[in-house]
Image (cartoon, rainbow, N blue to C red):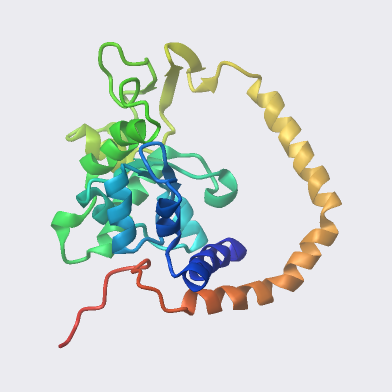
Length: 266
Protein backbone atom coordinates (compact mmCIF):
# COMPACT_ATOMS: atom_id res chain seq x y z
CA UNK A 1 0.00 0.00 0.00
CA UNK A 2 2.88 2.35 0.73
CA UNK A 3 4.23 1.54 -2.71
CA UNK A 4 0.94 2.52 -4.30
CA UNK A 5 0.90 5.90 -2.60
CA UNK A 6 4.56 6.53 -3.42
CA UNK A 7 3.90 5.66 -7.07
CA UNK A 8 1.03 8.16 -7.26
CA UNK A 9 3.18 10.96 -5.89
CA UNK A 10 6.18 10.06 -8.01
CA UNK A 11 4.10 10.07 -11.20
CA UNK A 12 2.88 13.55 -10.39
CA UNK A 13 6.35 14.82 -9.54
CA UNK A 14 7.91 13.20 -12.62
CA UNK A 15 5.29 14.76 -14.88
CA UNK A 16 6.14 18.18 -13.50
CA UNK A 17 9.89 17.56 -13.68
CA UNK A 18 10.00 16.11 -17.20
CA UNK A 19 7.26 18.07 -18.92
CA UNK A 20 6.54 21.06 -16.73
CA UNK A 21 2.92 19.95 -16.64
CA UNK A 22 0.60 18.07 -14.34
CA UNK A 23 -0.69 14.69 -15.45
CA UNK A 24 -4.08 16.23 -16.24
CA UNK A 25 -2.39 18.91 -18.36
CA UNK A 26 -0.54 16.22 -20.29
CA UNK A 27 -3.73 14.30 -20.89
CA UNK A 28 -5.46 17.46 -22.07
CA UNK A 29 -2.59 18.29 -24.43
CA UNK A 30 -2.90 14.85 -26.02
CA UNK A 31 -6.66 15.14 -26.43
CA UNK A 32 -7.44 12.40 -23.92
CA UNK A 33 -9.79 14.41 -21.74
CA UNK A 34 -13.42 14.64 -22.73
CA UNK A 35 -16.94 13.31 -22.01
CA UNK A 36 -15.70 9.71 -22.23
CA UNK A 37 -12.80 10.21 -19.81
CA UNK A 38 -13.13 8.99 -16.20
CA UNK A 39 -10.31 9.73 -13.76
CA UNK A 40 -10.03 7.36 -10.80
CA UNK A 41 -9.84 8.97 -7.34
CA UNK A 42 -8.92 12.54 -8.37
CA UNK A 43 -7.06 13.29 -5.14
CA UNK A 44 -3.97 14.91 -6.66
CA UNK A 45 -5.60 17.79 -8.54
CA UNK A 46 -4.61 21.43 -8.80
CA UNK A 47 -7.13 24.21 -9.41
CA UNK A 48 -6.05 24.26 -13.06
CA UNK A 49 -6.57 20.50 -13.29
CA UNK A 50 -10.11 20.87 -11.99
CA UNK A 51 -10.78 23.64 -14.49
CA UNK A 52 -9.56 21.47 -17.37
CA UNK A 53 -11.68 18.53 -16.26
CA UNK A 54 -14.72 20.79 -16.11
CA UNK A 55 -14.05 22.50 -19.44
CA UNK A 56 -13.62 19.17 -21.25
CA UNK A 57 -16.63 17.43 -19.71
CA UNK A 58 -14.45 14.81 -18.01
CA UNK A 59 -15.55 12.86 -14.94
CA UNK A 60 -14.09 11.58 -11.67
CA UNK A 61 -14.84 8.33 -9.82
CA UNK A 62 -14.58 9.14 -6.10
CA UNK A 63 -13.42 6.22 -3.91
CA UNK A 64 -13.18 7.68 -0.39
CA UNK A 65 -12.69 4.42 1.51
CA UNK A 66 -9.78 3.37 -0.68
CA UNK A 67 -8.20 6.82 -0.49
CA UNK A 68 -8.24 6.77 3.30
CA UNK A 69 -7.12 3.15 3.50
CA UNK A 70 -4.05 3.88 1.37
CA UNK A 71 -3.33 7.30 2.86
CA UNK A 72 -3.72 9.03 -0.52
CA UNK A 73 -5.59 11.95 0.96
CA UNK A 74 -9.00 13.53 0.56
CA UNK A 75 -10.32 14.20 -2.94
CA UNK A 76 -11.51 17.79 -3.58
CA UNK A 77 -15.04 16.66 -4.35
CA UNK A 78 -16.72 19.88 -3.28
CA UNK A 79 -14.38 21.87 -5.53
CA UNK A 80 -15.05 19.48 -8.42
CA UNK A 81 -18.81 19.77 -8.00
CA UNK A 82 -18.65 23.55 -7.68
CA UNK A 83 -16.86 23.70 -11.03
CA UNK A 84 -19.42 21.40 -12.66
CA UNK A 85 -17.29 18.26 -12.94
CA UNK A 86 -19.29 15.03 -13.04
CA UNK A 87 -18.46 12.90 -9.98
CA UNK A 88 -19.61 9.38 -9.22
CA UNK A 89 -19.11 7.26 -6.12
CA UNK A 90 -17.23 3.96 -6.00
CA UNK A 91 -15.37 1.57 -3.71
CA UNK A 92 -12.23 0.68 -5.71
CA UNK A 93 -11.06 -2.93 -5.62
CA UNK A 94 -11.11 -5.11 -2.52
CA UNK A 95 -7.31 -5.24 -2.45
CA UNK A 96 -7.26 -1.47 -1.90
CA UNK A 97 -10.47 -0.87 0.05
CA UNK A 98 -11.11 -4.22 1.81
CA UNK A 99 -14.70 -4.52 0.61
CA UNK A 100 -17.20 -3.47 -2.05
CA UNK A 101 -19.73 -1.91 0.35
CA UNK A 102 -21.25 1.12 -1.34
CA UNK A 103 -23.24 1.98 1.79
CA UNK A 104 -19.94 2.37 3.60
CA UNK A 105 -18.64 4.56 0.76
CA UNK A 106 -21.69 6.80 1.10
CA UNK A 107 -21.03 7.44 4.77
CA UNK A 108 -17.28 7.94 4.38
CA UNK A 109 -17.75 10.34 1.45
CA UNK A 110 -19.96 12.52 3.60
CA UNK A 111 -18.11 12.50 6.91
CA UNK A 112 -14.62 12.97 5.44
CA UNK A 113 -15.75 16.16 3.71
CA UNK A 114 -16.23 17.77 7.12
CA UNK A 115 -12.48 17.55 7.72
CA UNK A 116 -11.70 19.39 4.51
CA UNK A 117 -13.99 22.27 5.43
CA UNK A 118 -14.33 22.08 9.22
CA UNK A 119 -15.74 25.60 9.61
CA UNK A 120 -17.79 25.79 6.40
CA UNK A 121 -20.71 23.51 6.97
CA UNK A 122 -22.38 24.73 3.79
CA UNK A 123 -19.57 23.05 1.81
CA UNK A 124 -19.89 19.65 3.46
CA UNK A 125 -21.15 16.79 1.32
CA UNK A 126 -24.47 16.14 3.02
CA UNK A 127 -26.57 13.00 2.70
CA UNK A 128 -28.49 14.16 -0.35
CA UNK A 129 -25.29 15.19 -2.16
CA UNK A 130 -23.50 11.86 -1.71
CA UNK A 131 -26.68 9.96 -2.52
CA UNK A 132 -26.78 11.84 -5.83
CA UNK A 133 -23.11 10.94 -6.42
CA UNK A 134 -23.90 7.25 -6.00
CA UNK A 135 -27.00 7.31 -8.19
CA UNK A 136 -27.37 10.03 -10.83
CA UNK A 137 -23.69 11.02 -10.66
CA UNK A 138 -22.45 7.48 -11.22
CA UNK A 139 -24.90 7.10 -14.08
CA UNK A 140 -23.39 10.14 -15.76
CA UNK A 141 -19.84 8.91 -15.12
CA UNK A 142 -20.69 5.66 -16.90
CA UNK A 143 -22.32 7.60 -19.75
CA UNK A 144 -25.56 5.80 -18.88
CA UNK A 145 -27.48 8.75 -17.50
CA UNK A 146 -30.55 7.85 -19.56
CA UNK A 147 -30.57 4.24 -18.35
CA UNK A 148 -29.52 4.15 -14.68
CA UNK A 149 -29.28 6.38 -11.64
CA UNK A 150 -33.00 6.83 -11.00
CA UNK A 151 -36.21 4.87 -10.66
CA UNK A 152 -38.25 6.15 -13.59
CA UNK A 153 -40.09 4.98 -16.70
CA UNK A 154 -37.82 3.65 -19.45
CA UNK A 155 -34.86 3.29 -17.05
CA UNK A 156 -33.21 -0.07 -16.44
CA UNK A 157 -34.66 -1.91 -13.47
CA UNK A 158 -31.41 -1.90 -11.46
CA UNK A 159 -32.83 -1.97 -7.96
CA UNK A 160 -31.74 -2.80 -4.42
CA UNK A 161 -34.59 -3.70 -2.05
CA UNK A 162 -34.03 -3.49 1.71
CA UNK A 163 -35.94 -5.00 4.61
CA UNK A 164 -38.17 -2.23 5.89
CA UNK A 165 -37.99 -3.56 9.47
CA UNK A 166 -34.19 -3.23 9.59
CA UNK A 167 -32.88 -1.74 12.82
CA UNK A 168 -30.88 0.68 10.67
CA UNK A 169 -34.09 2.09 9.20
CA UNK A 170 -36.08 2.44 12.41
CA UNK A 171 -37.20 4.96 13.42
CA UNK A 172 -37.35 6.35 9.89
CA UNK A 173 -37.42 10.12 10.12
CA UNK A 174 -35.36 10.88 7.00
CA UNK A 175 -34.90 7.97 4.53
CA UNK A 176 -31.86 9.45 2.74
CA UNK A 177 -30.09 10.26 6.01
CA UNK A 178 -30.74 6.73 7.25
CA UNK A 179 -29.42 5.17 4.03
CA UNK A 180 -26.26 7.29 4.04
CA UNK A 181 -25.32 7.42 7.71
CA UNK A 182 -26.84 4.31 9.33
CA UNK A 183 -27.26 1.64 6.67
CA UNK A 184 -24.59 -1.07 6.42
CA UNK A 185 -25.92 -3.30 3.64
CA UNK A 186 -26.79 -6.06 6.11
CA UNK A 187 -30.52 -5.77 5.36
CA UNK A 188 -30.28 -6.03 1.57
CA UNK A 189 -33.10 -8.41 0.66
CA UNK A 190 -33.26 -8.39 -3.14
CA UNK A 191 -31.09 -7.04 -5.96
CA UNK A 192 -32.27 -6.75 -9.56
CA UNK A 193 -30.03 -5.99 -12.54
CA UNK A 194 -31.98 -4.88 -15.59
CA UNK A 195 -35.03 -6.58 -14.13
CA UNK A 196 -33.28 -9.88 -13.41
CA UNK A 197 -33.11 -11.04 -9.79
CA UNK A 198 -29.48 -11.68 -8.81
CA UNK A 199 -29.89 -11.58 -5.02
CA UNK A 200 -32.94 -13.06 -3.31
CA UNK A 201 -33.59 -13.22 0.43
CA UNK A 202 -30.08 -11.93 0.98
CA UNK A 203 -28.36 -14.68 -0.98
CA UNK A 204 -26.82 -14.56 -4.45
CA UNK A 205 -29.19 -16.34 -6.81
CA UNK A 206 -26.98 -16.69 -9.88
CA UNK A 207 -24.06 -18.75 -8.52
CA UNK A 208 -23.36 -21.35 -5.83
CA UNK A 209 -21.89 -18.83 -3.40
CA UNK A 210 -20.96 -21.33 -0.66
CA UNK A 211 -18.95 -23.38 -3.16
CA UNK A 212 -17.15 -20.28 -4.40
CA UNK A 213 -16.31 -19.19 -0.85
CA UNK A 214 -14.82 -22.60 -0.08
CA UNK A 215 -12.77 -22.66 -3.28
CA UNK A 216 -11.52 -19.12 -2.64
CA UNK A 217 -10.42 -20.07 0.88
CA UNK A 218 -8.56 -23.10 -0.42
CA UNK A 219 -6.88 -21.04 -3.14
CA UNK A 220 -5.84 -18.41 -0.60
CA UNK A 221 -4.23 -21.08 1.55
CA UNK A 222 -2.31 -22.52 -1.39
CA UNK A 223 -1.19 -19.10 -2.52
CA UNK A 224 0.00 -18.17 0.95
CA UNK A 225 2.08 -21.32 1.17
CA UNK A 226 3.61 -20.74 -2.27
CA UNK A 227 4.34 -17.09 -1.53
CA UNK A 228 6.27 -17.48 1.71
CA UNK A 229 9.49 -16.23 0.09
CA UNK A 230 7.71 -13.30 -1.53
CA UNK A 231 6.16 -12.25 1.79
CA UNK A 232 9.57 -12.50 3.48
CA UNK A 233 11.11 -10.30 0.78
CA UNK A 234 8.25 -7.83 1.13
CA UNK A 235 8.94 -7.50 4.84
CA UNK A 236 12.61 -6.77 4.11
CA UNK A 237 11.74 -4.15 1.51
CA UNK A 238 8.98 -2.47 3.53
CA UNK A 239 11.26 -0.02 5.44
CA UNK A 240 12.90 1.12 2.21
CA UNK A 241 9.59 1.54 0.41
CA UNK A 242 8.26 3.47 3.41
CA UNK A 243 11.27 5.80 3.31
CA UNK A 244 10.75 6.44 -0.41
CA UNK A 245 7.09 7.08 0.22
CA UNK A 246 7.80 9.59 2.99
CA UNK A 247 10.29 11.39 0.76
CA UNK A 248 7.84 11.59 -2.13
CA UNK A 249 4.94 12.75 0.04
CA UNK A 250 7.15 15.44 1.61
CA UNK A 251 7.83 17.00 -1.81
CA UNK A 252 6.13 20.41 -1.94
CA UNK A 253 3.08 20.29 -4.21
CA UNK A 254 0.41 22.94 -4.90
CA UNK A 255 -2.29 20.54 -3.75
CA UNK A 256 -4.17 20.44 -0.48
CA UNK A 257 -4.80 16.71 -0.30
CA UNK A 258 -4.92 15.83 3.37
CA UNK A 259 -7.18 18.13 5.37
CA UNK A 260 -8.19 21.73 5.84
CA UNK A 261 -5.95 24.56 4.63
CA UNK A 262 -3.86 26.21 7.31
CA UNK A 263 -5.40 29.63 8.03
CA UNK A 264 -3.19 32.59 7.17
CA UNK A 265 -2.18 34.75 10.12
CA UNK A 266 -1.19 37.67 7.90
